[in-house]
Length: 95
Length: 490
Image 1 (tube, helix red, strand yellow):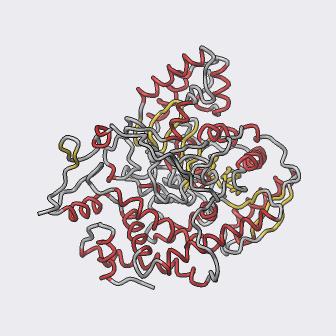
Image 2: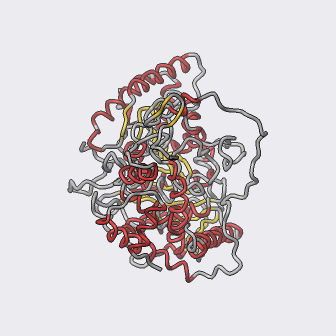
Image 3: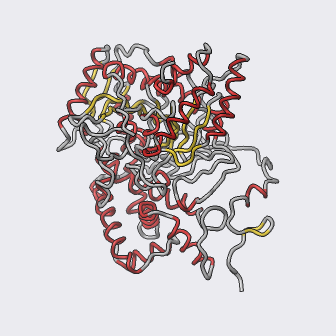
């Protein structure tokens, strides 16, 4: 399988990465090189094989459903580029 | 006094315990060495004030007989580990001047045991790379050079800063992480020892995530013994990481020097690649001969799905990366590039914040997870991964204790020499990536030099949670091959 220029633009949008029109054909070449490389997987017989979900057999650990964290709003916003009080600021989302 | 930087970690530990020198003295010589080695670009942040404060504290504790297992030992920390109040960037522009308000579990255990932080080490951006050339701080230089040449060589990656700093005697050991070979490949390129532990052995909490089902932290050290000492402090259960395993941490150092008599060592025929340099072949047979001389028994084994590990990796790792890196949105931390709408803000921030390699992987990951392609790529890759793991299980079920392979298909290459074709760069990890896909422990140990005088390493792959056997076998190789130190030119 390979991707065309329209697909490259669609992937870039899905990944939320702005891509300049001048970069599309270069990216297309790179992505197709990677897709060509992984193409060899199609020759493996995976009939009846379970997909891996956990590389080490382990049971999902559970913890008590209690509040054990919090009151660290200062810490949460400390590295934010734009804040007001304990809020993150973003461009207007709702009209 | 002899040059304190040339001591091994184990020797320094003993010297500190019997008061031959202080941690402050040991720390000062390393800080000076770092300053004199800026040409290597191994450190992206030096923390001398913090180092001195930690050294004084260690000296006070040692004086009272309360020093921990790493008391007073100066270490370097890969910039992928969150360090409280100390800038942590994963060497990406998108994290900018991120200063964590928390400490990663692994580093907190090192400080608990008395270690001293010298600074943060360079790595490939988000640990994506095999040459440390994708860092936003620029490439790291390998302290090794070809005989009679002054071409600057890569130290490997992604833990290139860790490997370069340990090889150049700038720190007594370093933390590193390994998703496809990022501890073992740079260790092999710099004649240092690198241990990638079993998945779940070290907590991933507080480490910048790349591919969560593959990422594992581990040490790079000057010797097998040094690496085993660091490993004991780094390992352990952490309730904050649900994939961290609740198992007692053994005294890894006790395994160093233990007899390997009667151990079966698998030599996988699929690792004998067409066109493999004769020097690598020779090194590999030499390694098997050394283990045999120590009483182990090399046996040929088969790992039939080996060739599919790298392509499966280049689906699974980018898929997980595209998901993990979705958090970098310009809102909560790091770089922000304005836009007219929030969507544009995201797109502009991520376009400017991610380097070319990261962008490529996030995009391929997004594609293989997208509607209509998930089954053909991601699901198939995860099935192949099951087969790769089964290969190893079958091998171990036949009584094989560990597997011996070359660590890399070549010695270190020049900066800028590879990379035009991304796939060519990916082939560096051909011998190491299988281990991550199967979650197993692997160690790279220096074993010789090529005809140009560059170090080469061998890899040992172990059963799950049997790092001890790898330390025992690694020690046999180190004893037979000797240690290799680069001539100082910087």
